Length: 403
Image 1 (cartoon, rainbow, N blue to C red):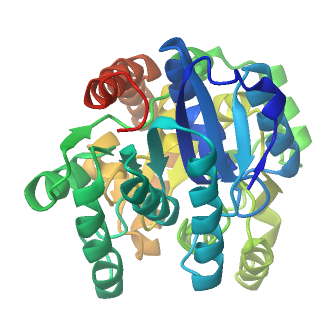
Image 2: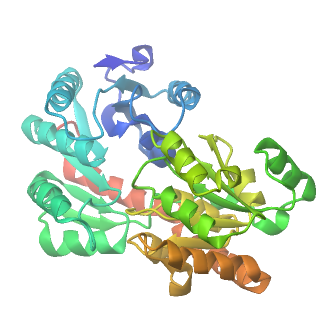
Image 3: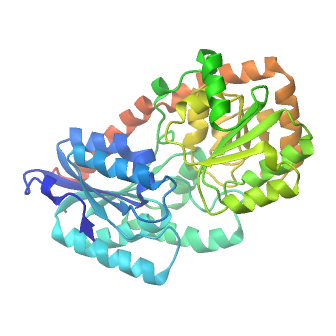
């Protein structure tokens, strides 16, 4: 395991804490505020994740993240952690983490993601290091496959015994953890938080900005822009929206999907087969999403599984009306059942799209509800809770090094 900026180390002058994730994009998208909290608590902050593979953002953004960590005086380490189960890759990642935790004396560790969280807790238990685990959505949940329950549930239940604090981000996971797991402490935070000050409700959009959006993504000026944000893979379920779009039988709409992934060609081929290839845009990962949210007309989030989706929270903060799949996380944010659809029923989504695109009053009502609701999930609220959780970790550690 290589350290990306060892020169920033403070030679043991501060207590050390380690943040881990399977991929760097999880650090970039979810954990920068948590890293700042650690630093405010006077820790020397280390970050270990996979900067090379599996990320949902592009290589340019990864370089920006490395530079940002360097400027924040944080020490990052390349950790070859896989996103999925692979015996060879997991053994390699385990050995790297074992070496890292032997090289530095960490007061405690904060880990996340199923594979990364499992490896981190195994090493932490063997090293005698306190560990905090944030689960961004258990792979077992109401409606999940039997395979997921058989594979993931017993592992999470067992590893909870080696977890000092287990943090969930939605109510369903919190209930399961409280009722069935034996972690030292079980907490819930309302997602990872969204910086509401960055997202301006749609009423602030200008005709010039809208034209710029249409020009950049080759969208007709008079088309209604339906936006989705997420990795291009099976689980994000963009295929369902394309099917609903074809059934909608309208040419005055455009479906814009911001994200990258291995399913891009498959989705393009599917759209062409259904005769709506000209209505679908997939420009890849987009760094500056604020102005895209601001100038879209409708947000659709069709995922099959979510913990507490950041993209949906950002869309709500932007004042976008939203249609979402009826799953854990989504339905905690969008409580109106008429705005939810089954993730395997394109006809339900088609009907919801038709209703939404045909009624401005409905759109306006949804905008207001979303802006009001998202205040409960603001970054400020989440960070106040995370500070208290980190203070609990300090108390458990006795404010010294590894236990």
